[in-house]
Image (cartoon, rainbow, N blue to C red; front, side, top):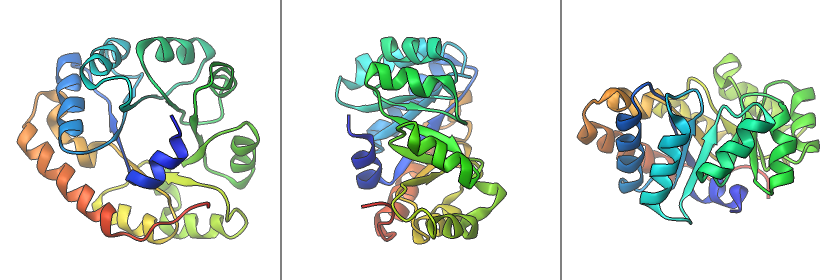
Length: 213
């Protein structure tokens, strides 16, 4: 898949992480049914690869389903085998080189200017600004001065109000976990999840497009 184009088009990456595989799968499917086109299943989840396999079977080959918190080459290979079509890392890690070997795009985690350079040099499709809450939207704006062509996706502590601020300051998309997913990954209310998804989608739809061209 062209991860950069998908991030620029859809503006929202949902992050699913939990200890109940069945609830995590139900969460993924409810998010997809709500119109969220990019969903990451964190490998820190219980039976994450099983969740990925079942979600891929349910959603089809073309859906934007990825694996998150991918650190090692082995994890990258396992995620690809389970059906992930892109990988997300929290930091610069050996998984990035393995993803390149496998032909998978990567949203690579970075925080400092040096790490941004290293992530883009390694071939990351976009840079996951993580944890974004450390510097907030103003830090993203400062980073975009020396890196105007870098596609940034803030992740970590991003809620609905913060998501709009990041997009206003040039992020091409935002990654959102618990403020969007809530208790659904623990078997909570899927109707409430769908309402939160609608709220986030409405917010990202009206925010101005940013990021690299």
